Amino acid sequence: MQNSRAFRRSQSITNVRSHPIAIALIIIVMGGVWGCGGGSTPSFTPAPPPPPLISVTVKPDSITVLRGATQSFAATVTGTTNTAITWSVQENLGGTIDSAGLYTAPQDTDGTFHVVATSQANSAAKGTAAAVVVARPQVTISPVAVSLFPGGTQTFTAAVAGLANSGVTWTIQETGGGLINGAGFYTAPSATGFYHVAATSVEDTTLTAHSTATVTTSAGGFTPTGSLHGARAFHTATLLANGNVLVAGGTNDRNDSLCIGGIASAELYSAAGSFAATGALTAARYLHSATLLQNGKVLVAGGFGDTSNCPFADVQAQNSAELYDPVAGSFKRTGDMTAIRGGHTATLLTNGKVLVAGGDQPGGGRDVANAELYDPSSETFTQTGEMVVARFRHTATLLKNGKVLIVGGYQLNSPNATSTAEVYDPSTGSFTATGGMAMARGEHTATLLADGRVLIVGGVASVPGSSNLQVTATAEVYDPSTGLFSTTGSMTAARNSHTATLLPSGNVLIAGGGDDNSTAEIYNPTTGAFSITGGMEVGRSGHSATLLQTDIVGGIVLVVGGGSLVPVATAELFFEDGNFWDY
Image (cartoon, rainbow, N blue to C red; front, side, top):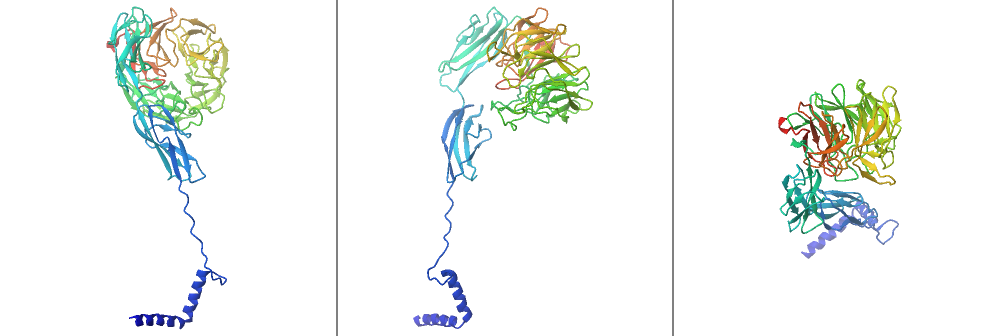
């Protein structure tokens, strides 16, 4: 066996030696292995080392946070000189996080959610932290608002969430505001007014819920009607020629107080007492304008858009406009305005054109003193004279002489309100200053009275001798014959972002406003005084109020949505004479 193996090795060597080509190939291969130049020491290029492993670590890696609360996260990136990361929340409803790692928990959802930091150098490298969101301990009270005659009674109930002890103590905020026992049984006082019943947690006395009790001798009051399909505030409500009310746009976003976005949905309220969806706006918007044209269509213009366009501390305004066709039940784009604006005014003139004036333009840097006219025949906007004072969140009222009264509002690049007023003359296309108010104010209301005067109510007013602002209960009346304002009676409650509606009786209904106030008052132009009427079932601000077409004595006012902190979807009807059962 060994001889056989030796023979085969010998035979192989002999075969190679006998073939010159094979010998040459061996030399070439050996030269490739040991290198050129005849050196005898082999050389080779080592494989590159593997790239360093990129890793991301998030601290803290686990937290418990209350609903709506914030928590800062930090990320550490190793294995690369590019330490930049992108923050996100894994779950769709798990809250939000900004580029600096500040996490905001969802307002109304509990659960465990995951904050993710992703390396910008390698998107496969991620760090994760768990955020356990729990309900904030709270006290709730029911009902949240009630209207009673003097001496009337109401039983309140309270619920405590997030605490072991569910007990509460009952008190009345105002001295002389009535009586309440330990079971929540309330007896109203003999004096009319607005009173507040409080339920305070026994375990945590910092947790208190309030209910507003309106004590009045008025027969007028509110009753619930059908609810919206979606909550909204700072929307528009327009009475159409067919008696329906078009409710369009608004905002229902309160997750980020620095960037509140608009919505595009719209609904119709009918005499049946219910809302039905109609075509959506072509653009999301709130604090826009909606004007019923003489041809029956509705011009919707400007306003602030959605949160996708929020490069500054506010979502930006827009210059787009659209028309709602009640027959087709849809919106379509019309000509754009010459300027972007939100919080402006739009007034239908006697010639059928629409005067659009002022407005705010966050980040736009353009003058908000300008004004323009919309011509329905050409569906275009053209510039007209500029206002004497740049302003937004002001009011515009068509006077009986066909001119337009512009009052108050906030001044350009200033947090202060203005007391100035001016009049637009359609025949000349120019604005002229008129007498000023006794108090600077914005977010007020202006209502044309039956005698041609204009009632200015409430708003956010500048504090004399200070840069501070405060909500006011004061009111003034403008007389076009003299061009002057004069003070009139004050409301019982201070209000801004409220509504003022002229009733068939000639009185004016003032409702809501302020910190989601549920109360309402009636202004009597003859006496110049306000009186308390029945309150709404929920507090509202930034809502709408529309006088409906009806034969009911005293009229019916539809109040929709609203809510400065949490928009609501509810709606209710006001009857001045309390004729609830006749409707």
